Amino acid sequence: MQYVLNITSETDTQALAQALTKLKLSGSVWLSGDLGAGKTTLTRYWLQAMGHEGAVKSPTYTLVEPYEIENRGSVKPVYHADLYRLQDPEELEFIGFFEYLDNPDSLVIIEWASRPEDLLTPPTLPIQIYNQANDIRSVTITSDEPLDLSPLNDLQ
Image 1 (tube, rainbow, N blue to C red):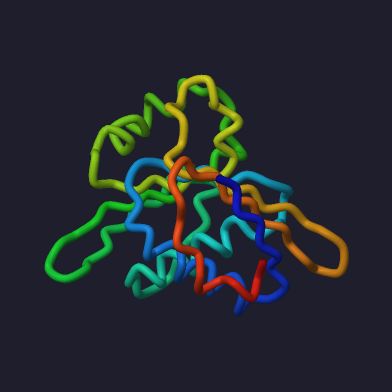
Image 2 (image 1 turned 120 degrees about the horizontal axis):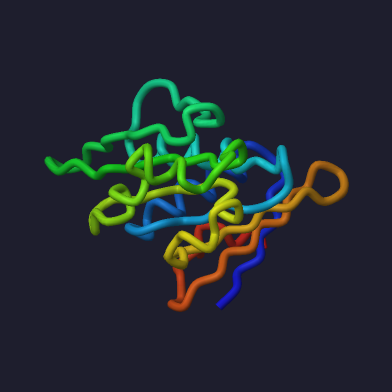
């Protein structure tokens, strides 16, 4: 199933992030789209909606930023990866990236997964964000299962 939303403001991005937290995802989410489309901004709001307090750094130069999100007595490992500057896919092996994906409880949010796409297992949830005219961003979410995105009805 494909869901297409139009994001026109920071408030819309926050609403999308809130809806994504309700999905209780594990595995990987691939954020793809134009440079500057809002992938990192969505991730920042998503981590905050999950309960992360404090700064959310862009992993542009470190490739991966790890987070441990506490929720009702349990800790969920979340990794934010930005592979835009990936020079050689072997770098992923050197930093232990595949171990993040091996943990069945972790969530790995990957920007620019297309760089090492051949090495990665398919995502749990692909999200595409593209710039449109007049500061509108088109967001397409593809899922094998129906998603409850009813809180986002105003964005469709």
